[in-house]
Image 1 (cartoon, rainbow, N blue to C red):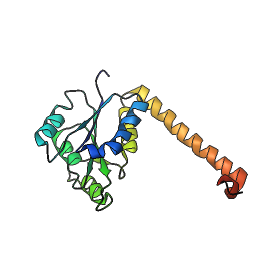
Image 2 (image 1 turned 135 degrees about the vertical axis):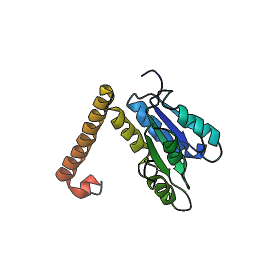
Image 3 (image 1 turned 30 degrees about the horizontal axis):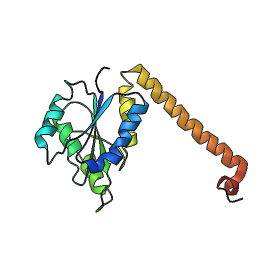
Image 4 (image 1 turned 90 degrees about the vertical axis):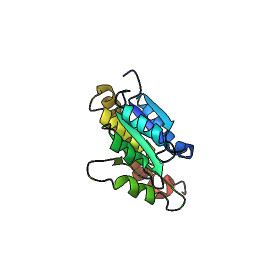
Length: 172
């Protein structure tokens, strides 16, 4: 694992606050990644070059965020055999439903794994889970993360059961 294993792409810098969550998640798991802007509509040649060289450059997963018509994840998936995880970006006009449907409704033969609207953190976790099938150290990190999630919920459950709703919420 010398170069990046995961490419994080987005069509515009306005998507960066959301897509940076994928980067932060991958970084927390120690997964090498790169993050760039590549637009399906405004930099088509750059998009094609990125997709067609991804595997040769060592990328094993691409996380693509897009809003509105949200063509970037699907176009990437049509150009490479590298798995693509799509992150629908929330839009002003339709709250991201347009993005979600554009990414999820791919034709047969061109799948894009799709997470929730603005779900870049989950895209990062899903990428780690997929990579964990090949890299035992990443799998161990994901397992540890899942145990921590469980532990945190159980702590909160015990606190609620012990203190009651009013004290738990600071009202008593």
